[in-house]
Length: 99
Image (tube, rainbow, N blue to C red; front, side, top):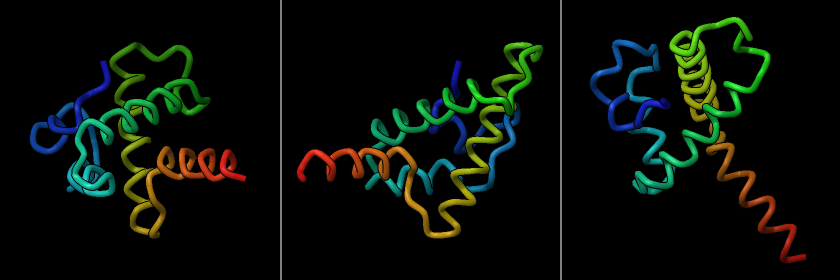
């Protein structure tokens, strides 16, 4: 099960996430916890389905790899001034429909 962002704020012993990641990610979504959670889960699913997670990994190990990778990627992107990837994707799709 993908961890809730709220759980990553405080008790993330099982997962290695950058300090302040969850709160920062929610702030990127105008403090909309539901939208941020939805985008977080979508991104973690993408990482789980990527080559970054070994096929032979146990379920807990696969989740640890995916959560660590996704949170680090999102944190680093935010540090570089890049918005949430899902928000960008949705904006791109929306702009394409308006043309």
